[in-house]
Length: 315
Image (cartoon, rainbow, N blue to C red; front, side, top):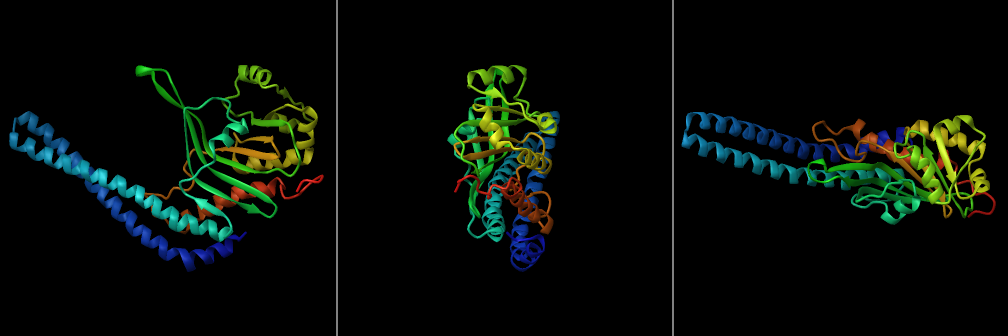
């Protein structure tokens, strides 16, 4: 894995020219969108005036301008999607390859829905499942993959119909460094889905038991359920709990973990799209560096939790 100093050299030697080319594309789209704004607003004002003055000519002219504005908006919207694709294929891909050439990046790919369900981290059932920016690779001994995910559910009907976001953020899967057969879930106390009734009744329905741990700090931040109390403590050693707390400090509150089938699943709520290029602000060294730091932060889960330390015969 490369350090920050080498990234600076890499950016100025290999990326800066490419970023400037994409910046020209972005600025062109911004100008086009601004013209669309002006045409649309002008046409609406003209239509209002024509209605007051009963001027048929002004009405026709305003309608022509409005159609032109809407058309320009549509063209700009398609152009923006192309700009995002171009940026990801050109810049984000090169950043990931710089971190490790063996890592695979698929801008339109995302974590398999069955893996998301298998993790058991999101208790509510979803109606829609989407994502992007899938990365997979091997960090020393540990295979990992992650992507951005968004899952939603539709509630109500008619005017009261609304869309509820169940999860929006990064979803990470990796080999765990211990052989495990049961299921252990570590949910953040800040997780809104863990209301009082779900804490009680979900555990009964899934055959889980609440696990009492030695670390009062850990228990103040997380709530733990498992199918096997002994195995949960085998996973959540004092040193491992300390590392999980440090990871929460790095990635933010709301992070949750599950351990099953010798894999670890990590769900990290994030509001923003982490790999999307800016549109109204220039892309530069700082913004591209954010993509580099984001990938590093996710891969650092492996190092922070010491997943490459193979224990008790795990290979």
